[in-house]
Image 1: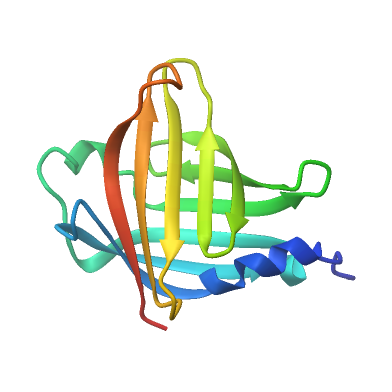
Image 2: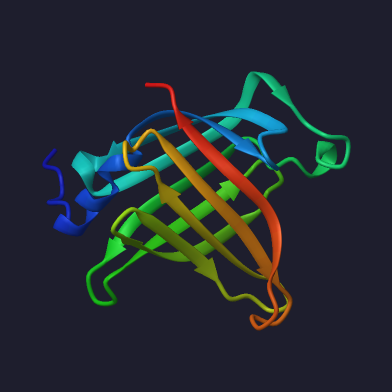
Length: 154
């Protein structure tokens, strides 16, 4: 079977490819195992995250921990934005929009009473990503939900 031809803008996501440890809340929660890989000949980027063998979860995360998670990322050439389809172990499913500029990934969604956004920036060597998830009830006043750090392992 033939593969689709990936849009050239997907190449901007190449820095994600590989295996990472993900930490949250000032590196006190985690590490979680995260892998980014191409699907369908590079037409989509897949992100899979699950608990690592030595992951620590604070008590308040226990029943709310989303793992495992999966995200499929594609590109919309009519809007020049990425679309992120997300699902997790709590049966949560969401759709986000996203952009990649220079070394910074922006991901967001506007939903009634629960707006979310992520800003994450690659280090100059590409082996660390530092970011922060924020949430807002109205899309106007934002508060930090949690920070995160990805550290490349392979």
